[in-house]
Image (cartoon, rainbow, N blue to C red; front, top):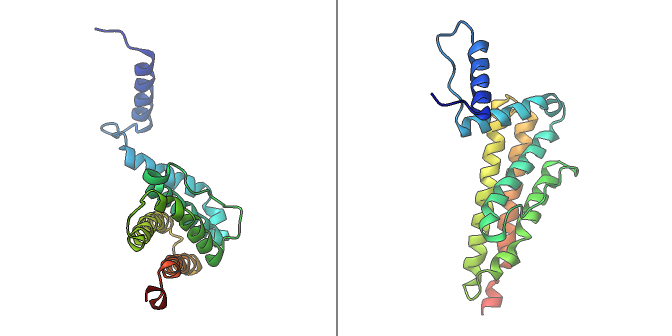
Length: 188
């Protein structure tokens, strides 16, 4: 038999504690997968602040902003590096202000994105960029909605504000494209 190292002993103690906590159970619960652990952590974090979120509807929009920024950061990371956007949680969290921040922060990287694709068709680069940030936004939006739904607070005013924010962000991305495409007069 080989001696047990300190990390192994610690792991065995944790396992033993798990078995003891489940006294009366036939066997110990398996450890959660990484995805399950992340989901449990997200739920625990949100549950600890759920009272504040329930009392203040605009806190759910702050969650939407954080999730959207994380999604956009993940989508832009291969091109612009990690943490391309900064989280501005101390600002106004109304639907309009949240949408404006998401649109302005994410579209603010267009020039840097475009400079990495010299010689390509400008409209294609523009549309590809919007596809990247829209995908990141949708990912963050869906994660925030799932978390709020899981907590049972995605209804009423919270749902209305979150959906309004989503619509305003998508409209902002459409405006961004239209503002940069040449008009029929400019093409002639």
